[in-house]
Image (cartoon, rainbow, N blue to C red; front, side, top):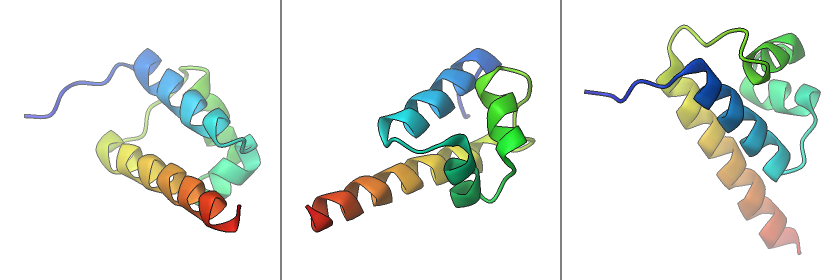
Length: 74
């Protein structure tokens, strides 16, 4: 059984992950294939994705790839 994620926890997670790699809301939205408004709504605890777990996985993957690519180019 998957652990429940509150809207506040999700908002903090999205904001932390995005800012930890220095992306704008627009750039993060493009990477996730959502609109910038969606990122804003998520970060302001106004909405959750319908199926949150694939989104969490995608965010983690994007951040890992970004960190890996930046290490390789340094």
